[in-house]
Length: 154
Image (cartoon, rainbow, N blue to C red; front, side, top):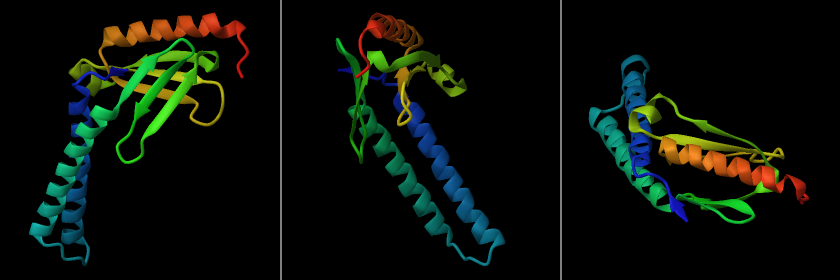
């Protein structure tokens, strides 16, 4: 099983910080403009708990996020509260994209998105890859999908 690049933790922690900040701003706004009294210590406490939980969640998620290319499919394992195992047979792969947003580019990361046939969970995203590894994985998945086109997609 292959793990994600360790810098993905910074992205996930940053997302948690953003959520905590929005939560703090929301509580401060409620105290200021609504008829709700929210003590400052309560706001600080809620934001602090949100920050700690988001850091712990990001670190645990990083430890549990793995993927592997086997002979018949792409296998993924991920999750903290709910653990999810996914198998994407190569015969179901429609196309593969490499994506990298502005924050991912700053961190030197990209994601591979595998679009599959079917309506439920029709795409699978593998975050936290270096751009070179993402392109390599994209090419490999594309080649394996083309090779398996002659097989029955059962």
